[in-house]
Length: 93
Image 1 (cartoon, rainbow, N blue to C red):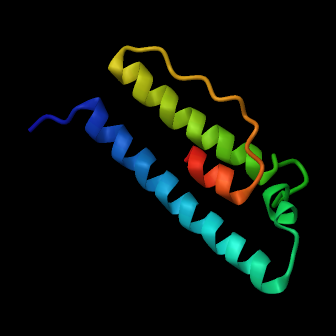
Image 2: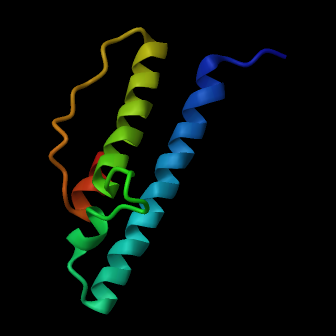
């Protein structure tokens, strides 16, 4: 039985982005519950040499759209990388 590149890659990327959306939702709920400015989370880094969360979301979505575009043989859409809030990041994913 053969498997296509699409079957081997896109479902994994979709699952990862879906999981990231759940994590962002939990962070947003936690920020609201504890009355913390949401930008504290969206601009946080887990390690000093790590990019902030918003940049990590940009990278995840760019990887997925690039992979899908290459497999389809089309040019990937351009995103401006301006999303800053949880809602905007969720919409991007």
